[in-house]
Image (tube, rainbow, N blue to C red):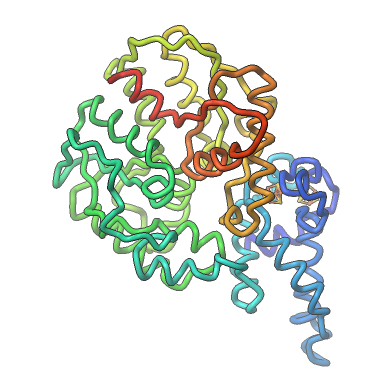
Length: 389
Ligand code: SF4
Ligand code: SF4
């Protein structure tokens, strides 16, 4: 209902046009928010409007429909358009709702996105990788996990399979802080549901989410930590809806927990780093759950470090190209967006680009392959773990 109101609220003012990273790299206006909204309303009118009800649905040009579907699934759901929208349309919710409706009408998802439900049902992860290998080879041998604990750590599929230095860093930093934490066995730590939610394929979400919530509840968990911003969004915003009630635990991004440990003196970074580092705010961390200061608190606590900022940072951050489950389908767009991030970081003469999201980590590393600009890319916890060894 909220989304229907938002479709009507768009005044086609065009304020958001210059913010769209996909339009930036493709030049395709079909991806822009006002155009997607206009097209969707046209489509609904032709198939469901009063005229359609009285005289039957109007035929919509097939080519036009295909182009529209492509535009809807090409968006990275970065939410940058929301940030400037004068009528406050919350696009990180609107675009997934649009996608769900497109799937219901048989107009999506696109390409490999169609394989996600089967992969998750089969192996518990969207990459269709063996569940038993979820924590290998990255899990540090020396770290002990409790069976039950107040705190649980969820590695997430992208971290566990595609950004292993990052999740290894998470676990090492948690161990150093010294509070006991639990994890589910690798076969039980299934996908949080985000890739299915964001591609409009909701059929198995309720089952997946209930399994996870009940498993953490059984371990006495009160705080669930995770370093993937997409998982954190899914857990905080959507898990309660699919679970049917408030979650029996709080969800926090790992940087929130670690920033508290730094402020409370439980984690001290003594080793210095004489470097100019630049931190990229992940869209779903900054705009999604408003975690902006915490990563900076952690990074500023490193002795001798110089922290630089991107022109667009915090709530205004520019998408690195990895979001919205679009990166595997629209690979070239994602690489082009990732290269803009690398270019700005190197233009500012940063020694190192710091990320805090496994999708950013995987995609920006990929974008650097074959690119004339090179920079050291490090996840925030990977960096901290290296300094507290
Ligand atoms: S969410 Fe991001 S990619 Fe999608 S339309 Fe808005 S600005 Fe463009
Ligand atoms: S800024 Fe908001 S109202 Fe204006 S065109 Fe974009 S989505 Fe529509």
